[in-house]
Amino acid sequence: MTQRQQVLVLYLKSSALDSETLAWAEYDGSGQTRHMAGDKDEPPYRTGVHALMDGWRLLQISPLTAHPNGAEFDLSYLKYEFLFEKLV
Amino acid sequence: MSDLLTSRQMASFVARGFLAFEAIVPETLNQRFLADVGDVDPAEISSIADHYAKVMSRSTIPVVAAGTPLQNAYPSDSALGELIKVPQIAGAIASLVGEGCVFDHHFLHITFPPHFSKSMGQKPVSQHTHQDSTIDPRKAFDIQLLYFPHKVVREMGGTRYLPGSHLRRVSEAAIGRYQNIRGQQHVVCEAGTVIVFHHGMWHGGGVNQSDALRYMFKIRLAPAIAQHRLWDTSDLPNDHAQQRPIFWLDPNAERDPIHATLTQPEPWFEYDTGRLEYLNRIRMWRYLLGDASFDADYWLTRVENEFA
Image (cartoon, rainbow over all chains, first blue to last red; front, top):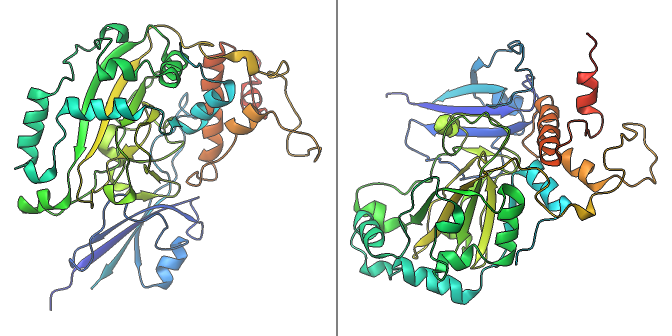
């Protein structure tokens, strides 16, 4: 049977995987569930570690990069992105 | 006559990026606006494209060139001309972008019940989170009036927005991956509500799961002058610019409410960049005050203490 990928993206409060979830996105290649912007006001996992405990495999962590001179205080995108997958 | 904003309202706008005026527009005016745009029963609409075409050709919403002074944008006796004269709305406009502000654009956003997308073979879906226009590095800011001419219930998918996101400089739909963010709000309101957004507010339209059309009319306005002290500053404390104790505090001492507002976190703030949000808010408050020395909780003074 062909496996499908489910993807979970968590944005945490710091670079620590056990810090709180602030934002999230879910995509389901199996078609079993459908997610979209604004569909939940509470995160699926309290921290990144809670996602690991539920069987999600961590694929990628956003790197920590130096702040460019003159732009140290500029803010744009959420900083601590953690990408997970499950095969179902 | 306009009701200028107070300093506390202005500080809240600086910190959170919006001000909400619930049911501020008289119902007679709401009904007049809906009649002007050609609101009809959804059963009479054949398709989304057809309804938009009819609204655009038949409504009395004027076609206005970008850059037109707001005072010349709408006939004075039209529903929209009356809307911008509602004292609280006129006061918010005057306080934030000045009485001589400039019209950028306007648009009537219509969100349709689910059967319209299903009839096109599509599933109803919400709009991705985005920031309007494009990357905007200015210190000056535009405002957007979001006018809800009828009652909006949760099922109608009222505009979703993220308080405090307005000072983040992102590139429009680049933030579409952020499906949900702690602290996000969904507009649920009475008829005649107007929400004023800073141009940088992250937002998106929700899915309309009801049987009714949802209307939201948006007007973007830009300042024509520096936005210095345009509001009613009479409530600014005399010692507003004084530094205060931080961290080790007199438990009985009251905080200056504006300093407190400028350093109030949002639920989605990261530990470290939440502090940078305070710095950016203080910088915006300095711009509004026209006083480059103002600080709250020593955040900027500390990093500006430099010697040649």
